[in-house]
Amino acid sequence: MNVMDKEERESADYGKAVEYLFSIPRFIVKNTPPVTQAFYRFLGSPGEDVMIFHVAGTNGKGSVCSYIASMAEWGGYRTGMFTSPHLLTPRERFRIGGELISEKEFTEVFEEVKGKLAQFKESGNHPSYHPSFFEYLFFMAVLWFEKKEAEIIVLETGLGGRLDATNVIEHPAVCVITSVGMDHQEHLGSSLAEIAGEKAGIIKAGRPVVYSNIRQEVSAIVEEKAREKGCFCRGVGRVNREELCFADKHIDFSLLTRYYGTIRCCLHTVAHYQPDNAALAVAAIEESGLRLTADRIREGLGRCRWEARMEEILPGVFLDGAHNEDGIEALLETARRDGSSRRILLFSVVADKDYRGMKERLVSSDVFHEIYAVPLKNARGLRRQQLRELFGDSISYVFPDSREAFGAILAGKGETDCVYIAGSLYLAGEIKALLNQRESFSEQ
Image (cartoon, rainbow, N blue to C red):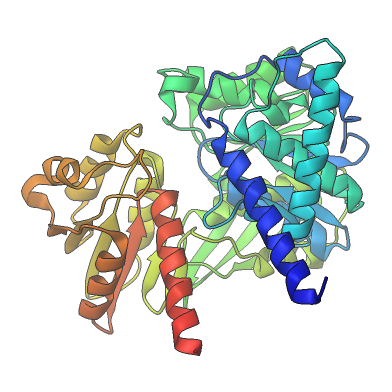
């Protein structure tokens, strides 16, 4: 078999693995935690013998994970990171040292889980068990991290916390709870307190807890759960950083820490919300027992990049993952600071979100001079007519698809205009794919 044949075969095998994974219903009734735990132990409890950062929350989970991983990597530690969702390929969910898992390794670890699952069923204890889409990916991740000899693992929960597959981890170095807001109410509860309780379900006996101390109602729930479990609990609020300066597409600020005193930090982003996430990540590093120098912390924060979080994909064009009311409010706070002469928004949303609340915040803010909408390719998205009815006269136009929308908006963008694309990570993925196609075409 020549090199091309081998590459084509590996690519085909990878494609089959991805096809199988996406054939698993993604929103099925969850397996009970004891069964998920049983299969994890059958795999050998991979990852339990290394330092694990376990991160839950509504907004900011991915950013906090990315900051933690970047600081650990710049501190010289081999660091694995498992996050969700992905934008273009499920390989994005598996990273070591910032690098994605290869197609070949993805297929290999997929087949390993598949083989272990067959053995598990044959053992007779749970003959009908099958991992959900997210569970399968999580098991693949921890096996891959073990094979790659990761010294540190950063785990982002998928949905909630208490019933999440990642909660099979029994001895995390630290449990981190980011900003909690109203999202996924059909799964997590109808009140902020109920949702906070689900997120706090990752807290383990005697393990330190670091949480976003922004909402008193949420803080009370987290602190109560920590007391029940006998945990040291540390809230991180906006008093933990000061001297914010937004300039030239970066944010300079002073971070007040427990062990390092005051650290001057620079984040290469325009996202007004990221200093809060950075402060939470630094607190998690401190309470984990991992000792990095202040310089490594500063370098790790400054070098960190996280896609679709107020990411400037073209000059004056920002892609953001805001997909709930809190996320939209953070988007608005950032947009108000951009100094542009004209702001344009491209918006889309999935049907199971509180899209009416998101729409009201966007329209009543008067931040955007023009608002456009577009239906998603994903079946969960609002259709074109539904978007028209949602916005009524407050929208400029509803495009038929993201390709036409992106092309038209870029064609009409002035040099001093700012374009924001938000509402769903599915939309972010579609725009990323279009951008990749543009780049590939320009290189030909």
